[in-house]
Each structure stands twice: as C-alpha cells, then as structure tokens.
Length: 421
Ligand code: GDP
Ligand code: IMO
Ligand code: MG
Image 1: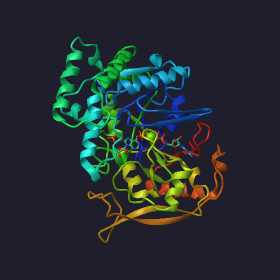
Image 2: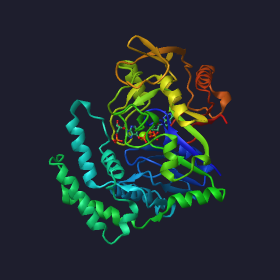
Image 3: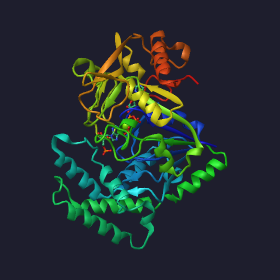
C-alpha cells in the first residue's frame, strides 16, 4: 500500500481533525507526523465535542491504531491529561496508541524558555502557543534532545537533570508563577504514565504495515503557511508541516506516496502574529469570527479572519502535491451577499501571482468577487443538494488549482459532510 497524507493548506485550524475523523473508517492506522500539543484538532459527533492535542484523530474509532510518529514532540503532562479524559469517555488509549521511540520530549524547561523567548521579542513576538515547541525542536536539531525511548534507560533522570540545568543556566528570567519543582514533579508523573504505552520503532512497523496491505493516513498538524521552510517565516512553527514532513516524520520513502488530501477553509484564518494579506478588519471580519466560532482550540485566542487567499492556496497545492482538496466551513458563508477571493497580490506597485520571498504587510490582495449562495447548507449530505452559487465557487477553485474538491464540510459534526468522490 501507499501512504496517504492529510494536511492543512493555510495557517492551521482548517478542520483537519474533523476530516481525519470522517476518513478514519477507511484506514487501519492514523499516524501523526509532526508538531506537538500546539495543535488543537476538534472532533464532533452526536453530543461529543472534543479537542485533541498530542493524540491522533483516529482515537474515537475502535480497531484503529493511532501512531505518534518520530517527527512529533510529546508533552507527557498534556498527553496524560488527554488520555485520562479519553478513559472517562470509555476509550482505551493504552490499547490503541503506539509511540515512536524517536519522538522527542517537551521538558518543563522548554515551555519556560518558550515563554521567556516570546516575552523578549516584544511587539515582534510570533504569537507562539507557549507549549515549548520551538525550544524542543531546537534541542532536537542541535542534538541535545531527550527522546521517548530514553525514558526506559537507567540514566534517564540524570539526562533530564543535565538538560534542565543547561536550560536554566542559559535563561536567567522565569515566567510569572513558575514553580520549577512542581513542574518537574508533574512531568515525572507524566513520564511514569507514558511507560504504560507501547513504544515502537515506528519506521519499521509502518513500513511493515504498508507491505502487509494495511491502509495508513498520515495526519498533519498546523498548516503549509506555518511550515518552517515554506511558511510566512519567521511567523511559523518549528517543523515541516508540508507533505514531505510526513515521509521524514514517519520514516516512509517518498516512492510510497499515495494520495495527499489538502484541507482548507472556504475563507482564511490565522491565530498569532504575522502577515495575513486577506485579513478583514471591522464588521465583516468580526462576523466571520462569530459565525465560524473562530477561537483557538489550544489557547482560546480569537482567530484573525479574512477572505480565501488563492495565491497562497495554489502555492500550498504545489508544495504538497495535493491530489484532492477538502473545503471546510463553507456553511459559515451561507448568509453573505458577496464573497471575495484573492486571485493575485499587489506589492510595491507590481502584480504578483506567486508567494514572494518578502512576505510581509506590504502585500495587498487583488480580489475577485462571487455572489453568495444565500442558503443554509448545514443539512446537505449529497452533491445535488449544494446550491448553484457554491458549486460555481468550487468549480472556480478547482479550475484555478488544477485539483478536484473531493469533500465539502458543511458543519462541525461528522455527519455534516458532503463526499464528492
Ligand atoms: P484543525 O486544527 O485543523 O483540526 O481545526 P480546529 O479544530 O482547530 O478548528 C476548526 C474548527 O471548525 C473546529 O471548531 C471545528 O469543529 C470546526 N469545523 C470543522 N469543519 C467545519 C465546518 O464545515 N463547518 C463549521 N461551521 N465548523 C467546522
Ligand atoms: P493546528 O494543528 C493554528 C501558530 C501559533 C503561532 C505559530 C508558532 O490546530 O492547526 P508554536 O506554538 O508552534 O511555536 O507557534 O504557529 N500555531 C497554530 N495556529 N493552528 C495550529 O495547529 C497551530 N500551531 C501553532 O499561533 O502563530
Ligand atoms: Mg486547530
């Protein structure tokens, strides 16, 4: 079998969690390949409304294996809390979650450093989720990190103490209310809890599964415009959120690439700082925020809202080799008379049809207008029920991107999904 990948095409929060949950019955395995608890993936079915951070979004389906891949970073405290909540919901995470020995660990001092570094940046802060993501990936790349598989070694406590002390020496400041001893105690409890799980050489297991004909969906976190190489640097996260990240984040050869599903909202949002060419200020932006419930699933921060950015979307389709597009939250635009899409950028008097190196606030969008469909689509389950205006909008995006829209999501719930395949 080939490895299918699902990932975000914008600045995160595209609705990946919902779509993974919808597609999960088609797969034997769901595998997260990068990021950590900076992610907040919301799932909704019946009365259940749940946000996952460190755990793959297949966890609510029985008989699915959920792998936390080598490219992911784990906060043991958050992981334990998430699992305990799942247990209360009747899920047995110990049975269905496998952890790569090579996944790196987020230490309390990584979180501390994230806070101190953000504070020191002042107005040019990234708007990090403060989960310790940047410092943990920095330690991974500078070859100082601790990996999940290390927790079983005899000198793990010493390694932890050594790395923590290095961090503390480098950073004189501490965030407010920071209690070192308490944080470390909580963390060690999380480590003991982690030991109940199955630790695997995930690259071997995943390749073996593929050889055996098992189906695997690699689940991305964040989005293409937050990618460390191709996003709106430096206002990005610290991992490769793009499709290539799935191969390094799971240990699968690119020759085994299957389908790549790219998820995007019918409009755009961004949480945290950084350029956002199609951002709408004032009433319309506020209306999208309200109708779309655009508040961060991890931090609760309001998400900035704007129109769909086709220049960025086409860039994301190219970088990821997207084979099928998934449009979410089309229902949020149900009542709009007019919908805008940025079809080009204007920067320093020039029209651009690409994402420039100097990706900053000097970019202005060039819009094309669409008439709104002005009907309630939240009950649609079949293609023929979608209004003509929405179909026209979709056809335009397909023509421009060269990729078919295969799923349209029309509400939060699993059932509010129109499969166009
Ligand atoms: P993720 O990080 O990509 O998984 O996305 P988030 O869960 O952070 O944010 C997406 C939000 O939109 C969540 O609150 C979802 O429940 C919600 N959502 C997903 N798809 C739809 C949709 O089609 N319509 C509406 N109204 N909400 C949706
Ligand atoms: P999901 O998987 C939206 C943003 C942060 C910040 C920048 C860097 O739910 O789509 P970090 O904590 O990674 O150092 O923050 O990236 N960010 C996200 N925005 N969705 C996410 O994940 C995000 N993860 C990080 O707001 O601007
Ligand atoms: Mg999210």
